[in-house]
Length: 277
Image 1 (spheres, rainbow, N blue to C red):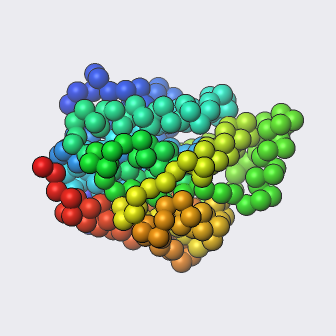
Image 2: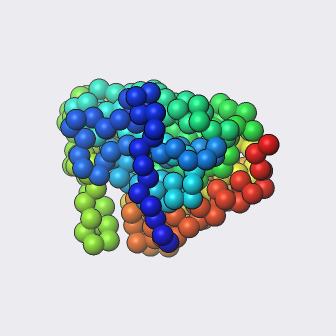
Image 3: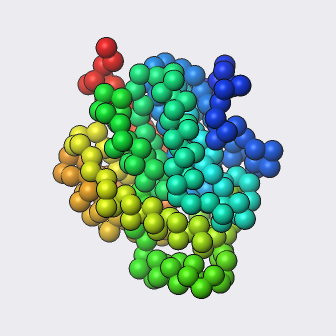
C-alpha cells in the first residue's frame, strides 16, 4: 500500500491542545491533525500508550484523502506522574476536543480506537445522531481484564501502594519499542476499570456499523470474554473478527497490514453505502 505523510492542518493556530505535541512528547508519539475531505476520522490510542500505536491506521486513512484527528489523550506523552493524576473523564475530554475539531471540518465522523480508545469511541459515538456518525472500528477493545489483574489493581489503588508496576514487553515485530510509559500507574488504572464499567452499563449501538478486531494471543485484554461482552452490548449486527496469534497492539503487530486493510475496507463500505448529501 502506498502511503503519504499527512501534512499539518492549515489552521494550526486553532487546534485543541490534544492535537498539539507537548514539549516533552517522545519522538513518534506526537498527535496528528490532517485536513482532507468531509469524512472525518477520529483515531484514539490506548491507556499508557500514545498515537504511535495507531499511527499506521491514521496515516492510511489520511492517504485515502480523509480528514484525520489523532489526539494525545490527557496525561499521556508527558510523564507517568501526569497520567496518575488524570481520570477517565479527562481522557474523554481530550477525545471530545478532537471530535469537535473534526466536526468543524467534516459532515460525518468515523471512529477507530485501540483498547481504551475503543471505549472512548463507543461513548462518543452513542451521543451523536446517526447521520453525523459513521463506522466504528474497535481494535482489542478494553471491555474487561483478567480477574486477577482487575483484583490487583483495585486492591493497590485502594491502599495506595505500590503506585505503579512494570509492564510486559509487547513483543512487537523487529523488536520495536513503543514510545510510551514503561510502567502502569495503578490509580489511573483504577480509572480505566471505572471507564469499562460505564461503557458496559450504558453503551448500546445500532447494528451494522461496528467492526471489532481482537488478537487471539492478547495478554492484556483476553479475547474470549471481551468478544462476549462486545456481542452483548453491540448486538448481533456487529462484526467480530479474531486475528490468530495476534497480540494487543494490533496496528503494530505482525497482523498490522490486515488490520489496516480491514479498517479501510469497513470504513469505505460504510461511506459507499451512506453517501453524504
